[in-house]
Length: 308
Image: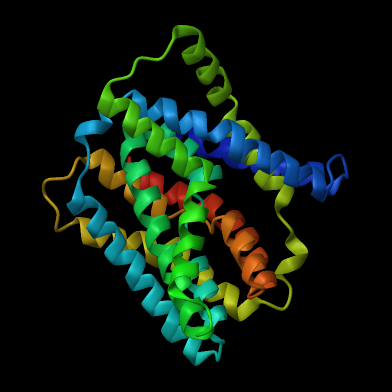
């Protein structure tokens, strides 16, 4: 237990530090936005890239692992769709609702947490989950958009999803790392050390940036929706992932643990960006990111205790 607490307390303390910096007005909302962009575009990609290269990514494509994880992602979307019908949400509101319930915060918490907990060995399953989950979730989101606005062509929507993949620095770092590993490209020592130095600062900056971006006031008047999102995202999601992998016997235990921890993560910060882009479920998404991040300080710790 001490090992888990020694891992999670510093991580969530950094989020708390970021939040306090915002509260005492040392950093503004705009500062938090700049810091988040710096972490997401500059620091986290080298962390993912160097971690993947430390393993043999070229021999690690496990279709069974990806399929098992994405079955749960799709199930979560179906579950939240039904809940959205019951609470009378509109089409795109149900889509963003589902995104809140199914899209973990891989970037700011998942990547540094899993690598710290399980070592660089966790980078490859992380990369596969990130690629597959983002593809499935964005495709589902765009499908909802297609059903809501029939005037939008399938070609335009396909173009949009491709652009979102290309403009995602974590996705690009994963692609490049897999290429380097497959072709066995050696990195110049000076560049390798530079990337390592940048990667070493990613965890602290990303978590502080996340703390600065939290907005507790957004939680008001969203209680019923937040309850569903919090329970599904932090409890139902990891339990379902645990169950589905009980039927898999040929998957590395580290991969299974990484998948379970990923599923237990709070709502991704990118969900608010997408909600804002589609002008739907914005305040609810902002509140969900905040409350699930706060509650996950307990639930993620419990998940790690059970996983390690």
